[in-house]
Length: 191
Image (cartoon, rainbow, N blue to C red):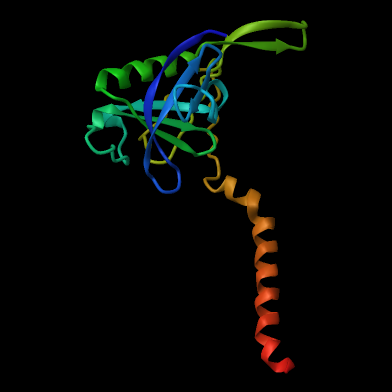
């Protein structure tokens, strides 16, 4: 697979919101990977743009992000993913940010081969051929574009959908913590 673009970008961590410099590689198959350094030994994460990316914004379009020290807001990039997880990036310059945005959008919308079970063949088809629109938080419109003669379906994902996956584990941890603390409270009564 061919490498489309690679270089240093600053990435904002998801929990502490600190900026860390990472080496990014964008591959022709729409996969964005990043590493700790340019030796590419320690893979940090892999993002499948064609399936997970809903939008890419750059510069002044990135509203709620503070750039790292010494960088302007024009260097910012935000990759919006379907699981409501946004990847905040910062390039070295405004031109570099625009080049990354263009490359990301191009690889996101490249042709995808889909299998048609009725004729048994693979057909090329752009991923957005169904005219779908993904709405993410902070993006509000007065009216949605309607295509005459087509049925529009608006799907609003539950914003806390990912949090429900860990609920049983959290309940188990809470029950075990309660049992442990309860047994410690009765400890002075045993002697």
